[in-house]
Length: 70
Image: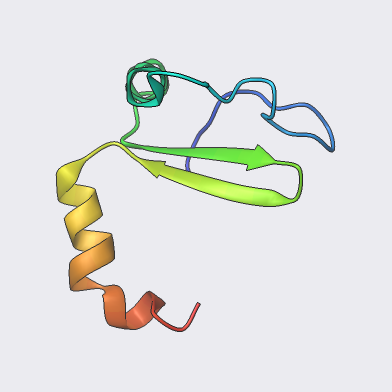
């Protein structure tokens, strides 16, 4: 999994999720973690935040046939 901010047991990053200007917080986390992808766990749900157009294009367009059944 990609790096992400520290999370608490069971509830994960629920208290760290931004309520406004989300893109700025995610971009800041990306700079702090030196990664264009960030992993967040919220309860039992996993989130992967993509901060790069190149990575988003590669994963979501070029490889869409691989991930379409998931």
